[in-house]
Length: 520
Image 1 (cartoon, rainbow, N blue to C red):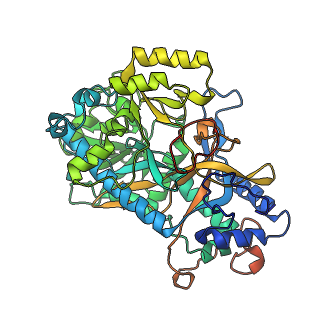
Image 2: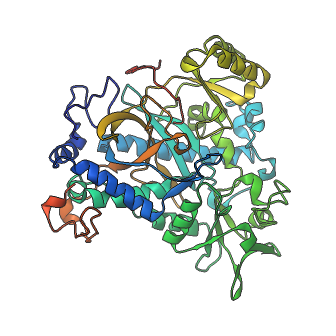
């Protein structure tokens, strides 16, 4: 199993150029993998899967007759992001997060952008995730979105586009860290030779970000608030709490006394300064949001308003996730920063606007329609692959509730080599980098590369059968300047430095073929 017969089939490929030659950043990787003995790559894939199974890296799929706990599929051929590409991504994400933070602060306070009619007032105020309860809020240091996961796709023109923003409780970073740990053990030498930038410091950076929100002159007490063991991302909640060295708590473990949040411990109550909440707004405080919530902490929003506790992310940030609001982000960037967007949006038609809605209804066979409130690959119509009955059904939905839908052209996502049934085949991928906003904005050099494992599919979500890859952002410190710590090689159980013999979208469901350099 090697790359000799690999065919990008006309799509933009992350490892190979149009002539079928390895891109400069992938040359070492391709050469080393081609040099492996017959059967060795397959054995390494199996060893990596076994290691992930032993680590218990799972996610939950509800309504699956085969069981809810699933091992997140992992492919050992990494996705490579070259230095110049990452520089654009990093700069563009910092710009986008700063602008969205200004937007959130504005719409819950002065609403200047709405008064200036840069974005329709009704579009924002009618969003399901707009929280009137958050009007007048001013989070610590003016930061609303402390942890962000922004979904990017590379189109056939080779450029990166933003597919959507995730400013509420973005998940997946635990897989980034675990994937990296496994792959460094799988290909230790090629990893070192490629000068890959590290991601292992993310838990420390996350903790520093959270601690920066504390207003008390003391060492901050930080907790991770989880809905519980039945949540689909519970593994990640417990993983991050463990990595940061903080307590993982449920709502029943916290209580508010005289406007101060406390955690119940075996030695009594302990004041909590910062809550990294992995609970949606609706459930975080039954006194303010859903009265029937048993997951949250009664009174925590009042404590937050008084400045006695910090929440990350701030409540109300979900309005910036709204898929219709997304279409206006380039205007939002221009309004607050007086800059053009570095990372462009995917062209988007907003069905609540008459002209856009008419275009969508007349072209349902060519477009992808998305519900603005659905995620995970659900609530979509893939026009080119839908039946006439399905298109008619969505047309009726759009006419009935136009605010709830947007439409976009069919994407030509980039592909990358992936091990499938003992062979290397091209599969479509997206990229979710993670951004931390504490004292400054910092983009973690890598991210979760999600891969659509089914042939021809563009749906990368784990709930829809997708998997993941390690993301190698090049430009790390040279090998001789690195601290070399012996790690256990999962192939041999030995020190990988001892011998050279150990070397190393949510989007549409089917592709109608490559459309290089244009929107189809």
